[in-house]
Figure 1 (cartoon, rainbow, N blue to C red):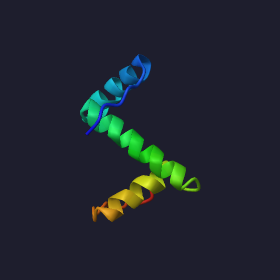
Figure 2 (cartoon, rainbow, N blue to C red; figure 1 turned 45 degrees about the vertical axis):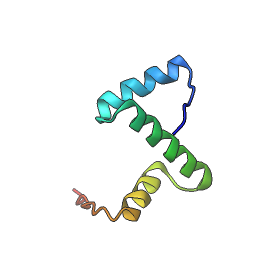
Figure 3 (spheres, rainbow, N blue to C red; figure 1 turned 90 degrees about the horizontal axis):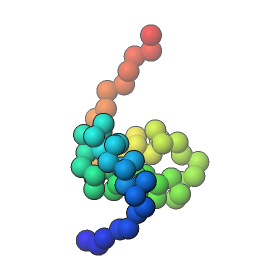
Amino acid sequence: MGIVKINDDLHEEVRRACAVLCRSINAQAEFWMKIGMLAEANPTLSFNDIVKMQLEAAQVRVAEVAAA
């Protein structure tokens, strides 16, 4: 484990986001880094595609929402 230096404004954004998304500051920053890394490696995928791919890889069953 290492230390990552980020600017104060970005740290504040992470702090705000983690409160809304019920994650620790470190977990929120790690999530954003992982999604960013996957987005760079897969530029044709949307955020939703990346999250869906990660959930499937973890064998998480996600219920489909029926169209209205």
